[in-house]
Length: 68
Image 1 (cartoon, rainbow, N blue to C red):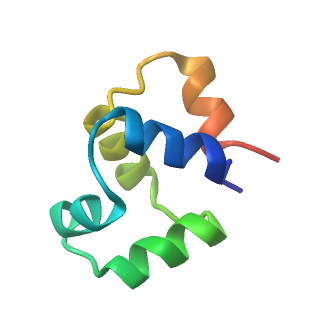
Image 2: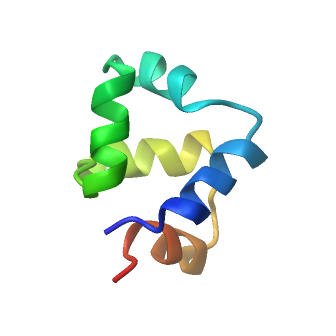
């Protein structure tokens, strides 16, 4: 599962919105929200999100995308 609060914080810190990320990923905002809630981003999407949101520390990546 995704740590939604930390993920949303990373989105805000990057100065973007979920809607902008969804558009850049070529998915609908509803699909983005569903993937966020269910933790179903692909590995490629997680890698892209980390680059886009400038999440570089391995522990930050794990805290957000590998939350139990």
